[in-house]
Amino acid sequence: MKNIFLAFTVFLFAASLTSCVVLSPKKYKALLGTKDSLYTAFNEGLIKIENLEKEVSKLKKDTAMLGEDLRDLQSRFTETNANFNKLKNNSSSEISKLSGDLAAREKRLKEVEEVLRKRDEATNQLKEKLQQALLGFTKSGLTVEIKNGKVYVSLTDKLLFPSGSIIIDEKGKQALTELAKVLKQQPEINISVEGHTDNQKVNNLGQIKDNWDLSVLRSTSVVRYLTDNEKIESVRMTATGKGEYQPLGANSSAEARSKNRRIEIVLSPKLDELYNLIK
Image (cartoon, rainbow, N blue to C red):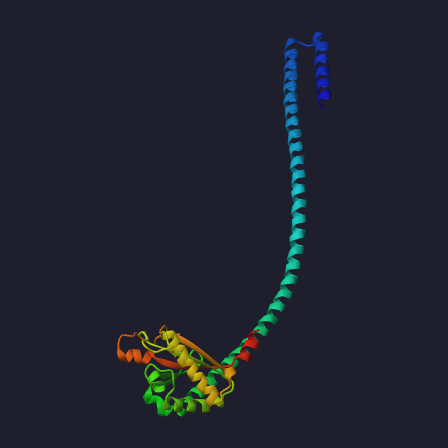
């Protein structure tokens, strides 16, 4: 394109020179002006062509880059869509699985709640039976109550033992005999006998060195009476000594200390069914 314009310009210039002999000065100047104007327009056209070529080259590069970006986006979209479909399918499967698990757990929970309801019902019935059987000993410091799903039969030491002794007296034996009558009818009940003392030091009691010894030996005396004399199954029995460390109240008076010196017979329903459900 550039060579064509240059040849055209040279041609015009030669033609103008050839015609000089016949052209008037005025026409000659006009012709030269026309040539200059054409040459200027030609140069401006060249510049525009170069700029356009640069723009076209840039647009080609931009178009190529946009094509790469488009292909990358299309690839990402395809991958994301595949992952979404996979996740949707897996989610449906997981939701179905979770729904089944939740249904099974809800069923298990209802079974556990039913076992606990039966336990509470049996515990209340046991308490009522014991209260009726031991009614004659309540004035001597015997109490029956439910705590944490267990029945606590609490007997003050004066109901069971002479002062400082580990030998059960006759009144205490009567109370334990009445208690045993109820326990024999409840083979599903575990029995824990806990001995408690006040915080006064033990003096001149021979083999009994301290409150630990006193609480343990009194507890085992009760267990032996229930197993040997009343024939309660030994496998159901547990003897423990708590010493002075679980008082009902402060040892601030003789009356308070008397309440702290006690035997607690803790009756717990066997929860094998519940444990099996939990497992």
